[in-house]
Amino acid sequence: MGQTVVEVNDLSRSFGSKRALDGVTFHTMAGQVYGLVGANGAGKTTLLKHLLGLLRAATGSVRVFGLDPVRDPVGVLGRVGYLSEERDLPEWMRIDELMAYTQAFHPTWDASYARELIDTFGLDPSKKIKELSKGMRAQAGLVTAVAHRPELLILDEPSSGLDAVVRRDILDAIVRTVTDDGRTVIFSSHLLDEVERMSDHVTLIHQGRVALSGVLDDVRGSYQRSRLHFVEHLVQPPVLETAMVIEGGGRTWSVVHSGSLEQFRRAVVARGGEIVESRNATLEEIFMARAGRSRQVEAA
Amino acid sequence: MDITITVTDGVPIYRQIINQVKYLVASGLLLPGEELPAIRTLALQLKVTPNTIVKAYGDLETLGVVHKRRGSGTFVSEGRPQLAIRERRRVIEQRIDALLAEAHQLNFTVDDILRMVRERKAAMAPTDAEPEEVEK
Image 1: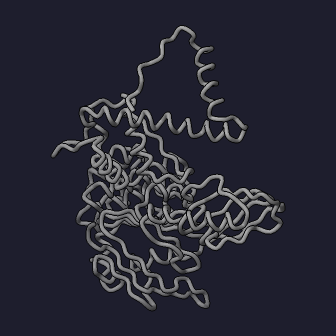
Image 2: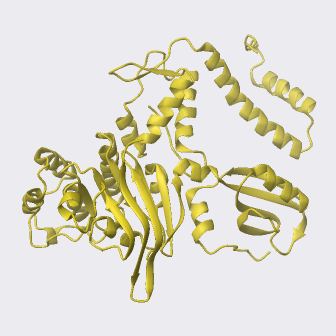
Image 3: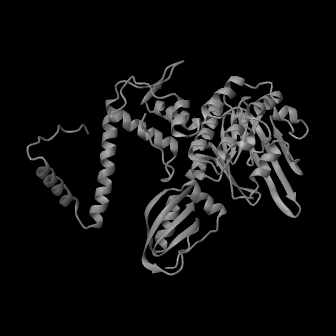
């Protein structure tokens, strides 16, 4: 693995009485894709804004390329590409003006790459930003985020509200960024199947805290979803130590659980049941178990 | 390369790629010496992180299914008849496992099933000769 790119240690931040981030530690290595997930208002955007120096760490520390993004914005931002959730671009500019404007900030700007992307997206360079559709606006924002070939690409909810074609453009940009000389991508998303496909690492933020973080395949491998069948009709969900979510009713229950399958099997048998089927849980199931409303029980 | 990824059944994506490449090789849809897509190309096609392709290709190389040539790409290895037989067996064995589970639920014995398989075969193609015995 490559070098450490981002080092966030024990970062906390409050807005008024609301605790937006609470002791967050988050590290990234070069050449990897990091997926950031969590409900709206969980703290994903707040964390990303700290990486860009848009917010100052109240407690804890933030380092990007070993630098403090608040004290050394030029050193950090010149090497970072960022697509914000609001896609806040200057409305009055034409696309070609936006490119020239962005280029001025980035000595590494690759004008032919920018032209190629604008071409591929079918954007008209003479159009004003305010005339663009939501999808075109995201595409224009994406060009400004990647055309200087940043070492770190940060995308905040890049797919939010976009159709499949533009979403594909965004995923392609992630793949290209990583395969071109081991650059790093951090993206937040609420589309878990996208995170599952595109991430090497996944971090779940829940109510300002890191609820789960690790290599995606390791995270996936440590949770199972099993279907259980019981001889007797159960009125209450069965009590199973490693179970995190139990759904179902009567004689058939579906459980998301962690730990060893063998241990779980013994617990199920001890309650008079058997495992009908078991498989690795999907990210969606794991996240619902860790951050959702747990123990949903259907009326039997 | 015809590969389909799903994120609903809980199988890690790199493993899905490994299984499908093995299947393509075993079934002759990928031939020895044939080049696999470049990492970036396959990542773009499947919409997955390139590191997943790197991992899948690496494991396939360890398994001897493919090999890398310096400065060029990843190629299907020559002469893997053992693999082909193992893979063909694996595909059929999965079907047999499912059949046995269902037979058990419906109260058929293994002997019933064996007899029924022969009967079906006879009804289907009465003149067909049995294929030569598969290497054990």
